[in-house]
Length: 375
Image 1 (tube, rainbow, N blue to C red):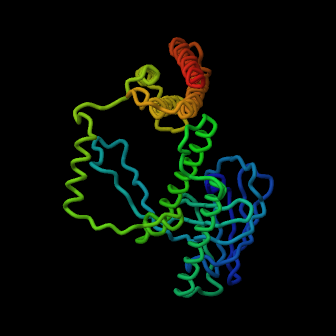
Image 2: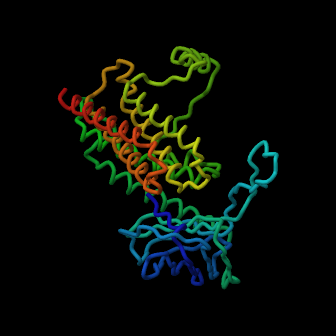
Image 3: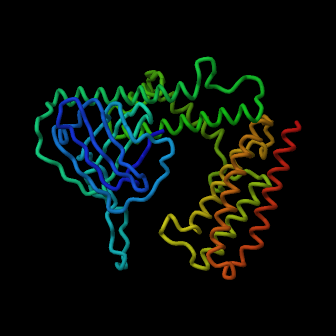
């Protein structure tokens, strides 16, 4: 997927002084040398022919493993005037909360390129300060449209390369007709995750484009079939929905002991932490992250065991592969709780019993995986 580096940028300089060529230097926090850009193509009209300087007021250090400091390739969309919605701050001291979130339109700095070594790289932010010089030359509207089409094709090529890497020509994107083992299911699920990420990335980029559906379909290699929607279609849809729907007055949850136990643990953690006012609005607060990891563990257990709970015959390999994912989230939950407790061990002795329950659940998941491996 894309390298999103805006949080790590300290400052940068990008120039499109020479038509058809974009060069620049970007400093990243924690990297001992700046990255250098040497790209083919032009920026959008607001930056074409100019020198752009930008600065991040609050950079954070990142992991740059595998990131090449010499970025050569093609420009993507490069503009300092992309319109995005940003949430308005409301007066926290005011007794009245707004009925609905208030937004304002803001200019977003959007710098995208496709490098030969790292694929798609993106800086997208409204938080930077920046200044733009007077242009040395002007890009015409026709040339800008041509550049936008070239950028779109570069995105298609990037997605095509990702797709080929995920699914070699001799392999199918669909699960095999015969039962697969846990390792085959793991590989299949990883590909599914990656394609979901690809779809999300395309939607984020083109969601405001009037041809969004066609662009995404082309990039994903889908065929769009025209369909005439008739009253008969809606009647059949209503029948299907009525047949498949659960009781609307009750929230459906799969009845499996592993799911129920993790839900109880997460609920207890939330109640105890909330009563002690341990949650904050800071997403980096470990107590906030603890509940998030607990909830994600529940969702992974549901994905693994929902059909089992309903008595549907499920491939053992699928159950084992999906339980591995749940186990990974459970390990994150345990590790996050250890981090929370380490802040003040004496103050958080109340977590001891919950910790034991988490480890007991871990053993139960491992036992369940082993039983399915033997089938």
